[in-house]
Length: 409
Image 1: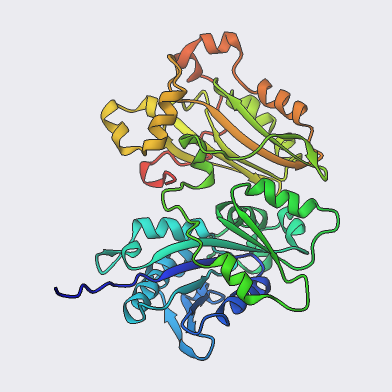
Image 2 (image 1 turned 45 degrees about the vertical axis):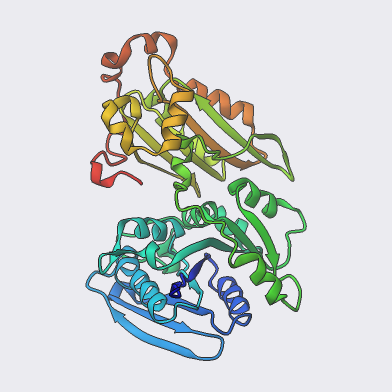
């Protein structure tokens, strides 16, 4: 009987975090626990010049320290042109070594996950070479709430990845937290309990680990909780698209804990775009974070993504509702999305619906619900049908893409 060769598939633990010192501290703590573990890091501080510094090291030695020239200086290009090829190359040359990939502070982990599904290296899918074991976001406890409530953008902190990068600090931080399957809170705990509660509301699906609040760090214990957990589900969509698959996007906590309240708003009739637009200041000003999907009367075929943080709001496209597509196209949707649509199908409007989650400090849930409800079409407006809705004034007409190539995954 001939022996069968078993090829190892390295596991990748992705570390994201807006606080570089806290993220680096966690990375170093993991590195010392395993001599074979590889730490991969990309410094994009000169990305706008088209330069990225890549380092690969173990606990004992620096294996690579190279300045990489990119044709296009952007974060997405860095992921496609160097981060993913580096992971595949290391998997081939050091198949017995797991990898800790440290993302730059302004890079969102969902962007990496999207790149993995869209890109191949030498014609081979990245996920055939490595297994993404978990996505870990490190949060610095002392700065978390200040950053989440900040109204400045990355440019104000010289963290923007490109000249056209206008993302807000609060947006980036919220997305890093929400995509994580594990949160590491670094530093001394907030004595009020507010920060920890907000984190639970932002990512109720994530395991939470506290470390760095004492002089010594239990590196072995931390590694046990962060590495080889198998928590990452590659089929999991981004948080804004979760409701399309019937997955939770938030929790209802009207009473709140430590003054942190949360609300999930659901509706089976569309928003009147003008009334919704007029209400935006109040909706974003009273909440720390809003996210989810909505249905606009003037865009009956399109599921619209909503996210708000730092006093700003973003609208995007989640693609067409299933009800707006021919039956043959349903096969392109995931199984969970089709099942969710079947279970909650409306005879008139199909799977069209609004699901929005909000988090705030001392947020008045009943008042917010009344304001959102007041933005929906009235019975008389609803009776007019889509032909009448098309004539409604729409301030959002240019807010989000409708081109199929720009639709969110």
